[in-house]
Image (cartoon, rainbow, N blue to C red; front, top):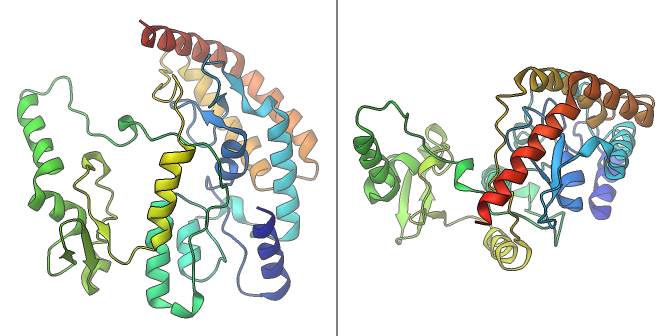
Length: 325
Protein backbone atom coordinates (compact mmCIF):
# COMPACT_ATOMS: atom_id res chain seq x y z
CA UNK A 1 0.00 0.00 0.00
CA UNK A 2 2.88 2.39 0.68
CA UNK A 3 4.14 1.91 -2.88
CA UNK A 4 0.62 2.34 -4.25
CA UNK A 5 0.25 5.65 -2.41
CA UNK A 6 3.51 6.88 -3.96
CA UNK A 7 2.14 5.95 -7.36
CA UNK A 8 -1.11 7.81 -6.64
CA UNK A 9 0.81 10.88 -5.44
CA UNK A 10 2.79 10.88 -8.68
CA UNK A 11 -0.41 10.70 -10.72
CA UNK A 12 -1.95 13.65 -8.85
CA UNK A 13 1.24 15.70 -9.23
CA UNK A 14 2.04 14.97 -12.87
CA UNK A 15 -1.18 14.08 -14.72
CA UNK A 16 -4.11 16.33 -15.64
CA UNK A 17 -6.61 14.06 -17.38
CA UNK A 18 -6.46 10.99 -15.15
CA UNK A 19 -7.28 10.27 -11.49
CA UNK A 20 -5.54 7.59 -9.41
CA UNK A 21 -8.75 5.53 -9.20
CA UNK A 22 -12.51 5.60 -9.58
CA UNK A 23 -14.10 5.48 -6.14
CA UNK A 24 -17.81 6.14 -6.20
CA UNK A 25 -21.38 4.96 -5.78
CA UNK A 26 -21.18 1.75 -3.74
CA UNK A 27 -17.73 0.90 -5.13
CA UNK A 28 -15.55 1.99 -2.23
CA UNK A 29 -12.30 0.71 -0.74
CA UNK A 30 -13.66 -0.84 2.46
CA UNK A 31 -12.91 -4.43 1.43
CA UNK A 32 -9.22 -4.06 0.47
CA UNK A 33 -8.26 -1.33 2.93
CA UNK A 34 -10.26 -2.19 6.04
CA UNK A 35 -11.82 -5.65 5.87
CA UNK A 36 -9.06 -7.90 4.51
CA UNK A 37 -6.07 -6.33 6.30
CA UNK A 38 -7.84 -6.77 9.65
CA UNK A 39 -9.28 -10.22 8.92
CA UNK A 40 -12.84 -8.86 9.13
CA UNK A 41 -15.43 -11.08 7.42
CA UNK A 42 -18.79 -9.50 6.66
CA UNK A 43 -22.01 -11.31 7.53
CA UNK A 44 -23.74 -12.33 4.32
CA UNK A 45 -27.32 -11.12 4.25
CA UNK A 46 -26.83 -8.11 6.53
CA UNK A 47 -26.06 -5.40 4.01
CA UNK A 48 -27.18 -4.06 0.65
CA UNK A 49 -24.29 -1.63 0.22
CA UNK A 50 -21.55 -1.57 2.87
CA UNK A 51 -20.81 -4.21 5.52
CA UNK A 52 -21.74 -3.16 9.04
CA UNK A 53 -21.55 -6.45 10.96
CA UNK A 54 -18.63 -8.85 10.88
CA UNK A 55 -16.57 -11.43 12.72
CA UNK A 56 -12.85 -12.14 12.92
CA UNK A 57 -11.86 -14.70 10.27
CA UNK A 58 -9.44 -16.32 12.73
CA UNK A 59 -11.95 -16.46 15.59
CA UNK A 60 -13.90 -19.74 15.55
CA UNK A 61 -16.24 -18.74 18.42
CA UNK A 62 -18.50 -16.74 16.08
CA UNK A 63 -18.44 -13.45 18.01
CA UNK A 64 -20.34 -10.82 15.98
CA UNK A 65 -19.41 -7.13 16.21
CA UNK A 66 -20.17 -3.79 14.60
CA UNK A 67 -17.35 -2.72 12.30
CA UNK A 68 -18.22 0.92 13.00
CA UNK A 69 -17.24 0.48 16.67
CA UNK A 70 -13.70 -0.71 15.93
CA UNK A 71 -10.57 1.47 15.98
CA UNK A 72 -9.75 0.02 12.57
CA UNK A 73 -12.84 1.66 11.12
CA UNK A 74 -11.76 5.02 12.47
CA UNK A 75 -8.31 4.57 10.92
CA UNK A 76 -9.90 3.64 7.61
CA UNK A 77 -12.25 6.64 7.53
CA UNK A 78 -9.42 9.03 8.43
CA UNK A 79 -7.37 7.51 5.61
CA UNK A 80 -10.24 7.99 3.15
CA UNK A 81 -10.40 11.67 4.14
CA UNK A 82 -6.66 11.94 3.53
CA UNK A 83 -6.98 10.29 0.12
CA UNK A 84 -9.90 12.50 -0.89
CA UNK A 85 -8.06 15.66 0.17
CA UNK A 86 -5.05 14.57 -1.90
CA UNK A 87 -7.26 14.24 -4.96
CA UNK A 88 -7.07 10.47 -5.38
CA UNK A 89 -10.61 10.51 -6.82
CA UNK A 90 -13.16 12.97 -8.11
CA UNK A 91 -14.99 15.22 -5.65
CA UNK A 92 -18.25 14.10 -7.28
CA UNK A 93 -17.50 10.41 -6.68
CA UNK A 94 -20.42 9.74 -4.38
CA UNK A 95 -22.92 10.55 -7.13
CA UNK A 96 -20.94 9.08 -10.01
CA UNK A 97 -22.38 6.24 -12.05
CA UNK A 98 -19.04 5.43 -13.66
CA UNK A 99 -17.71 2.02 -12.67
CA UNK A 100 -14.11 1.57 -11.62
CA UNK A 101 -13.39 -0.87 -14.44
CA UNK A 102 -14.89 1.30 -17.18
CA UNK A 103 -12.87 4.28 -16.00
CA UNK A 104 -9.70 2.21 -15.88
CA UNK A 105 -10.14 0.70 -19.35
CA UNK A 106 -10.92 4.13 -20.79
CA UNK A 107 -7.68 5.53 -19.42
CA UNK A 108 -9.47 7.89 -17.01
CA UNK A 109 -8.11 6.14 -13.91
CA UNK A 110 -4.59 4.91 -13.19
CA UNK A 111 -5.76 1.83 -11.30
CA UNK A 112 -8.72 -0.30 -10.34
CA UNK A 113 -9.30 -2.53 -7.32
CA UNK A 114 -11.46 -5.61 -7.90
CA UNK A 115 -11.39 -9.40 -7.85
CA UNK A 116 -8.51 -10.99 -9.73
CA UNK A 117 -10.68 -12.48 -12.48
CA UNK A 118 -12.15 -9.11 -13.45
CA UNK A 119 -8.79 -7.39 -13.17
CA UNK A 120 -7.11 -10.03 -15.34
CA UNK A 121 -9.81 -9.71 -18.01
CA UNK A 122 -9.53 -5.93 -18.14
CA UNK A 123 -5.72 -6.00 -18.16
CA UNK A 124 -5.81 -8.26 -21.21
CA UNK A 125 -8.28 -6.01 -23.03
CA UNK A 126 -6.27 -2.88 -22.22
CA UNK A 127 -2.91 -4.26 -23.23
CA UNK A 128 -4.30 -5.48 -26.54
CA UNK A 129 -5.78 -2.05 -27.29
CA UNK A 130 -2.98 0.02 -25.70
CA UNK A 131 0.21 -2.03 -25.30
CA UNK A 132 2.08 1.17 -24.45
CA UNK A 133 0.09 1.40 -21.19
CA UNK A 134 1.74 -1.80 -19.87
CA UNK A 135 -1.04 -2.50 -17.38
CA UNK A 136 -0.23 -5.09 -14.71
CA UNK A 137 -1.95 -7.25 -12.09
CA UNK A 138 -0.64 -6.51 -8.59
CA UNK A 139 -1.44 -8.01 -5.18
CA UNK A 140 -1.65 -5.00 -2.88
CA UNK A 141 -2.35 -7.18 0.19
CA UNK A 142 0.28 -9.93 0.20
CA UNK A 143 -0.40 -12.46 2.94
CA UNK A 144 -3.99 -11.33 3.58
CA UNK A 145 -6.20 -14.23 4.68
CA UNK A 146 -9.00 -15.35 2.39
CA UNK A 147 -12.00 -17.66 2.26
CA UNK A 148 -12.91 -19.84 -0.68
CA UNK A 149 -16.28 -18.54 -1.84
CA UNK A 150 -19.10 -20.93 -0.89
CA UNK A 151 -21.35 -22.41 -3.56
CA UNK A 152 -24.19 -20.24 -2.28
CA UNK A 153 -22.32 -17.22 -3.66
CA UNK A 154 -22.80 -18.44 -7.23
CA UNK A 155 -25.51 -21.04 -7.63
CA UNK A 156 -28.78 -21.96 -9.28
CA UNK A 157 -31.88 -22.51 -7.17
CA UNK A 158 -34.89 -24.62 -8.09
CA UNK A 159 -38.22 -23.29 -6.84
CA UNK A 160 -39.74 -25.46 -4.12
CA UNK A 161 -43.02 -25.41 -6.07
CA UNK A 162 -41.43 -26.66 -9.30
CA UNK A 163 -43.61 -29.32 -10.96
CA UNK A 164 -40.58 -31.09 -12.43
CA UNK A 165 -37.53 -30.41 -10.25
CA UNK A 166 -35.79 -33.48 -11.65
CA UNK A 167 -35.99 -32.01 -15.18
CA UNK A 168 -34.54 -28.74 -13.93
CA UNK A 169 -31.68 -30.68 -12.33
CA UNK A 170 -31.07 -32.50 -15.59
CA UNK A 171 -30.88 -29.18 -17.44
CA UNK A 172 -28.49 -27.82 -14.83
CA UNK A 173 -26.39 -30.97 -15.13
CA UNK A 174 -26.02 -30.32 -18.88
CA UNK A 175 -25.04 -26.71 -18.30
CA UNK A 176 -22.42 -27.79 -15.78
CA UNK A 177 -20.87 -30.84 -17.43
CA UNK A 178 -21.80 -31.14 -21.12
CA UNK A 179 -18.70 -29.76 -22.85
CA UNK A 180 -20.48 -28.34 -25.91
CA UNK A 181 -23.23 -26.63 -23.90
CA UNK A 182 -20.79 -25.40 -21.27
CA UNK A 183 -18.48 -23.90 -23.90
CA UNK A 184 -21.38 -22.27 -25.74
CA UNK A 185 -22.81 -20.59 -22.64
CA UNK A 186 -19.42 -19.52 -21.26
CA UNK A 187 -17.52 -18.47 -24.37
CA UNK A 188 -20.04 -18.04 -27.19
CA UNK A 189 -19.97 -19.53 -30.68
CA UNK A 190 -16.83 -21.50 -31.40
CA UNK A 191 -14.97 -20.05 -34.36
CA UNK A 192 -16.80 -16.72 -34.03
CA UNK A 193 -16.24 -15.53 -30.46
CA UNK A 194 -13.48 -17.93 -29.45
CA UNK A 195 -11.45 -20.94 -30.43
CA UNK A 196 -10.12 -23.81 -28.33
CA UNK A 197 -6.47 -24.12 -27.37
CA UNK A 198 -6.15 -27.73 -26.27
CA UNK A 199 -8.69 -29.05 -23.77
CA UNK A 200 -8.24 -26.50 -20.99
CA UNK A 201 -7.66 -23.12 -22.66
CA UNK A 202 -9.26 -20.81 -25.20
CA UNK A 203 -8.35 -17.80 -27.33
CA UNK A 204 -10.70 -14.90 -27.97
CA UNK A 205 -11.53 -13.75 -31.50
CA UNK A 206 -12.54 -10.33 -32.83
CA UNK A 207 -16.28 -10.90 -32.29
CA UNK A 208 -15.83 -11.57 -28.56
CA UNK A 209 -16.80 -7.93 -27.97
CA UNK A 210 -20.37 -8.98 -28.81
CA UNK A 211 -20.25 -11.94 -26.41
CA UNK A 212 -17.36 -11.49 -23.93
CA UNK A 213 -15.93 -15.00 -23.81
CA UNK A 214 -15.77 -16.24 -20.22
CA UNK A 215 -17.26 -13.04 -18.85
CA UNK A 216 -21.02 -13.21 -19.33
CA UNK A 217 -21.55 -14.26 -15.70
CA UNK A 218 -22.76 -17.88 -15.99
CA UNK A 219 -21.28 -18.48 -12.53
CA UNK A 220 -24.18 -20.67 -11.43
CA UNK A 221 -22.75 -23.57 -13.43
CA UNK A 222 -19.04 -22.89 -13.07
CA UNK A 223 -17.22 -26.25 -12.78
CA UNK A 224 -13.70 -27.70 -13.13
CA UNK A 225 -14.16 -28.09 -16.90
CA UNK A 226 -13.78 -24.31 -17.14
CA UNK A 227 -11.20 -23.09 -19.66
CA UNK A 228 -8.69 -20.29 -19.08
CA UNK A 229 -7.70 -17.58 -21.53
CA UNK A 230 -4.40 -18.54 -23.15
CA UNK A 231 -3.36 -14.86 -23.00
CA UNK A 232 -4.19 -14.42 -19.34
CA UNK A 233 -1.24 -12.86 -17.44
CA UNK A 234 0.88 -15.61 -15.87
CA UNK A 235 0.74 -13.89 -12.49
CA UNK A 236 -2.98 -14.70 -12.18
CA UNK A 237 -2.42 -18.44 -11.79
CA UNK A 238 0.63 -17.78 -9.64
CA UNK A 239 -1.38 -15.65 -7.22
CA UNK A 240 -4.37 -18.00 -7.18
CA UNK A 241 -2.11 -20.96 -6.38
CA UNK A 242 -0.30 -19.00 -3.68
CA UNK A 243 -3.56 -17.87 -2.09
CA UNK A 244 -4.94 -21.41 -2.05
CA UNK A 245 -1.80 -22.91 -0.54
CA UNK A 246 -0.70 -20.18 1.86
CA UNK A 247 -3.50 -17.72 2.59
CA UNK A 248 -6.77 -19.67 2.57
CA UNK A 249 -8.34 -20.33 5.96
CA UNK A 250 -11.66 -21.67 7.20
CA UNK A 251 -14.15 -20.53 9.80
CA UNK A 252 -17.42 -22.09 11.04
CA UNK A 253 -19.29 -19.00 9.79
CA UNK A 254 -17.81 -18.86 6.28
CA UNK A 255 -21.01 -20.37 4.84
CA UNK A 256 -23.41 -18.62 7.24
CA UNK A 257 -26.13 -16.43 5.73
CA UNK A 258 -28.30 -14.25 7.93
CA UNK A 259 -32.10 -14.58 7.74
CA UNK A 260 -33.43 -11.04 8.25
CA UNK A 261 -37.13 -11.99 8.34
CA UNK A 262 -37.44 -10.93 12.02
CA UNK A 263 -35.73 -7.56 11.56
CA UNK A 264 -36.72 -6.42 8.07
CA UNK A 265 -37.84 -2.97 9.22
CA UNK A 266 -34.60 -2.40 11.10
CA UNK A 267 -32.53 -3.60 8.14
CA UNK A 268 -34.32 -1.22 5.79
CA UNK A 269 -33.71 1.68 8.18
CA UNK A 270 -30.04 0.72 8.58
CA UNK A 271 -29.45 0.62 4.83
CA UNK A 272 -30.96 4.11 4.55
CA UNK A 273 -28.55 5.33 7.25
CA UNK A 274 -25.62 3.71 5.45
CA UNK A 275 -26.45 5.57 2.26
CA UNK A 276 -26.95 8.91 4.01
CA UNK A 277 -24.19 8.84 6.63
CA UNK A 278 -21.86 5.95 5.79
CA UNK A 279 -21.04 6.49 2.13
CA UNK A 280 -19.74 10.06 2.62
CA UNK A 281 -17.26 8.66 5.17
CA UNK A 282 -16.08 6.08 2.64
CA UNK A 283 -15.34 8.77 0.09
CA UNK A 284 -13.75 11.23 2.50
CA UNK A 285 -16.55 13.76 1.95
CA UNK A 286 -16.59 15.11 5.49
CA UNK A 287 -14.97 18.01 7.33
CA UNK A 288 -14.45 15.97 10.50
CA UNK A 289 -14.30 12.17 10.00
CA UNK A 290 -14.16 11.41 13.74
CA UNK A 291 -17.29 13.46 14.42
CA UNK A 292 -18.88 11.90 11.35
CA UNK A 293 -18.35 8.43 12.80
CA UNK A 294 -20.06 9.41 16.07
CA UNK A 295 -23.09 10.76 14.21
CA UNK A 296 -23.13 7.59 12.09
CA UNK A 297 -23.13 5.42 15.23
CA UNK A 298 -26.02 7.36 16.73
CA UNK A 299 -28.08 7.05 13.58
CA UNK A 300 -27.40 3.31 13.31
CA UNK A 301 -28.41 2.80 16.94
CA UNK A 302 -31.63 4.71 16.36
CA UNK A 303 -32.32 2.56 13.30
CA UNK A 304 -32.19 -0.60 15.42
CA UNK A 305 -28.64 -1.90 14.95
CA UNK A 306 -28.47 -3.40 18.46
CA UNK A 307 -31.58 -5.51 17.79
CA UNK A 308 -30.07 -6.72 14.52
CA UNK A 309 -26.76 -7.61 16.18
CA UNK A 310 -28.61 -9.65 18.80
CA UNK A 311 -30.57 -11.53 16.12
CA UNK A 312 -27.44 -12.17 14.03
CA UNK A 313 -25.59 -13.50 17.08
CA UNK A 314 -28.48 -15.82 17.96
CA UNK A 315 -28.51 -17.28 14.46
CA UNK A 316 -24.71 -17.50 14.28
CA UNK A 317 -24.55 -19.38 17.60
CA UNK A 318 -27.21 -21.82 16.41
CA UNK A 319 -25.38 -22.29 13.10
CA UNK A 320 -22.09 -23.14 14.80
CA UNK A 321 -23.80 -25.45 17.30
CA UNK A 322 -25.48 -27.36 14.47
CA UNK A 323 -22.12 -27.84 12.75
CA UNK A 324 -20.64 -29.35 15.90
CA UNK A 325 -23.21 -32.15 16.12
